[in-house]
Image 1 (cartoon, one colour):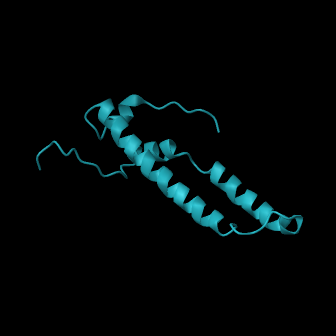
Image 2 (cartoon, helix red, strand yellow; image 1 turned 90 degrees about the vertical axis):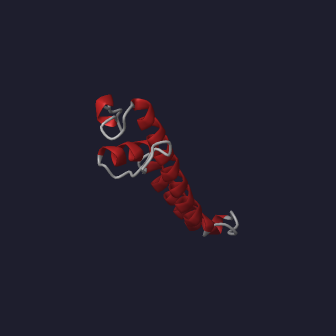
Image 3 (tube, helix red, strand yellow; image 1 turned 135 degrees about the vertical axis):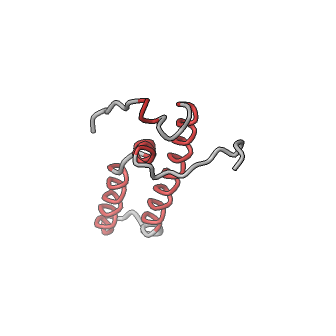
Length: 98
């Protein structure tokens, strides 16, 4: 996947400043990363307890396939930026009055 530039002005459409956008994006990226890690842990938990003998070669191949699928997923910051650009993130400033 190639590197793609982002127009910084697009990131400030929902937030007042670029700094607020960065905070929102970082929190969302952490949420996405935690969700992806939990999903990977759940999938790999199945393979725990199997010995690493050659007779379990098929299990090792499946475990490697699961790991490769995880590596090809979109990275958390990329998902967070797409969510912000698509207006899919709800956030509020706790310092502002309702």
